Length: 212
Image 1 (spheres, one colour):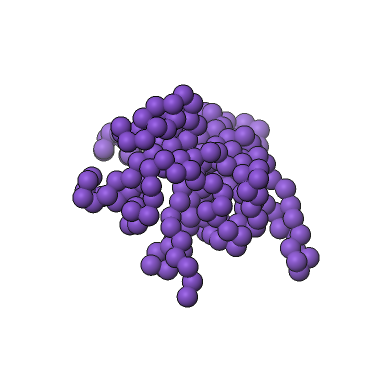
Image 2 (cartoon, helix red, strand yellow; image 1 turned 90 degrees about the vertical axis):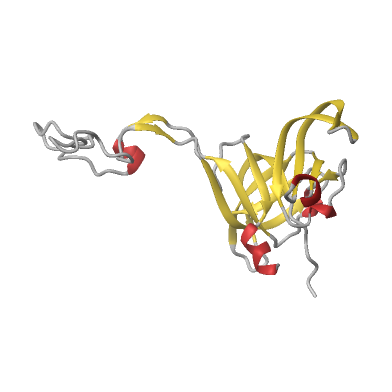
């Protein structure tokens, strides 16, 4: 019988992309993530809080008590994960890449690269107008409004604006390898985020639901 693995959430710094060869000689693109040191900062149960969840703390500096329970660093970031087996965690214990194993599936959450203010062709993929001379309509979005009725632009209309810098989740990415000494996760494929930017890695939500 397959061992049931508890859910986990960690923050890591995206070190960059490279490529590896599998045992069959297939070239596999991978992304290397340097995981940050993490602790279990708080455990919420149905009896105490009305729901089951675990708070993970990252980037601890000076010492301080968390919820008056244990002597832990004062965390810069707290991330809460809703899980059904919160009782399996203990406040104050550390979390490392040892929680993940080669071949497991993970979800990676990151922010896309910001591109500033962009027009409709780059932001939404519009084809634009004629490229010939004198058309006076090349990279614009066309007519946005109406005449007498309704007299305003409909909500949700695709228009120029800020592009990128949005939260995105890439699901079911395979872990190719781990390095416990350097706290590295090597994940197959790519996901949003700039180099040296932070991403959230959690055990794949859909795979956990199938096993439950």
